[in-house]
Image (cartoon, rainbow over all chains, first blue to last red; front, side, top):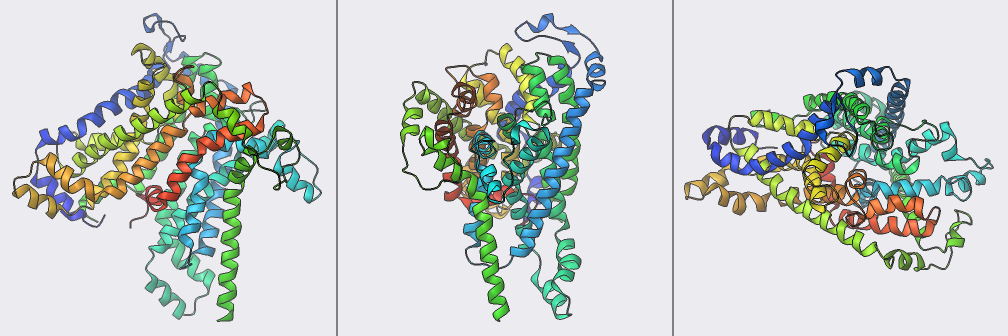
Length: 305
Length: 274
């Protein structure tokens, strides 16, 4: 965004708001009707007792009851705890691996573009395909994971039947899919670091690790922070791969908040409770989004930097 | 000098191993789809077998596959086109005009980008029922356009800001209307952004299955929904499941190979200035 100053100038010089609304109105109407309105309805639904298939006029106002039920329900807290554990373990593993690999492999390597293309493939595969494939890989009898373990004389494990192993399985699948994202972000950040600074540090005789820790990492701290928050947001929203891989089980060992909301609403038919939990999840995600915006706000560009 | 060479070789080895890890599961999916039912139940480590297209034949000639495929294509393509159209218009409006409410709209758009789909699923199921949009492709398309617009607007906003304002001002002095300036000058210059936005929108509209599962029925189902229901129907017929999964995975993978640079620009947009 090199032309920030110029953009600010046009905004002041052209203030034809009717033309502006012509451009933005279709998008605004669609987002209001099919995104913002549902989100607000999710919060409102938490105050009503309503069952699917009955007219909305028959819904009963129940006040804070759903919220009280939800926040005193140990199952909800377990689900929140599972989500926190999932986010903490998977995101820290992805950040550590992604950063380490990027630092080790950055630089002018011929063919890097080709490798990067291969690295983004896991992110593009449909979650349904990712979930099914990992289910096959983790299969107790003929899965590749157990076959590989057998090579090292490790006994076959019932991955998706054991609570701890199933939790490990959803984390492994997430690490596979999203470590490349961290890698690509860090590589992109590193490539924008001014090389003369690094040269200067090297001429001063600093060793690789010192240069990395004292110069490189601080210079890309902003990219690292935004990558971390973006990964956290996605980790808190996670649903589809888990839906296919474990459906929250066995027991409730992999029941993250999104999974819990889905089950409460569409299997348990408790829409009020589902909406109350939605508000909880929404609050967490919106807080993280606010953090992300504070770090990297596209709207700030126009004020020049 | 010798040390540097060794280091380079090491790096290539590391990159190759990483690439293998990334592609490994995708390869297993494709290889399994080419195995007979009996072969999928042997060991996972067999890479040498006589490939068969039997699973693909079974999946494709299933009575409903054609319908699901057409549904998926309609939803994927129309959602993408509408999102791009409204998205680039809104991005231009937000980037180049000042008007009351601009900041509110911009911030709301940014916040909507990260709304969890599970949170939307419940109220949408209710609202779509009221609006008689449940079980229709139109209802699904409307929802996909709405959830994809925030990212698209946000991505294209950055691209519009990079268009030299002088070009637009010159055209404006020549008497060009804003609509024409947008079409003739801005759109051609933000084409890379449009390509990235198209791939990301299509990826969601083509891959998504939770909202589609809730909002469609037998006749409006998309492929991923069909696949998620197959799991219980055909149980552990891994060959068929993997054939279906491969078919679903194929278009986004193909787009990635065709436009890897755009995909990466979409992934890193905002965090890395370039």
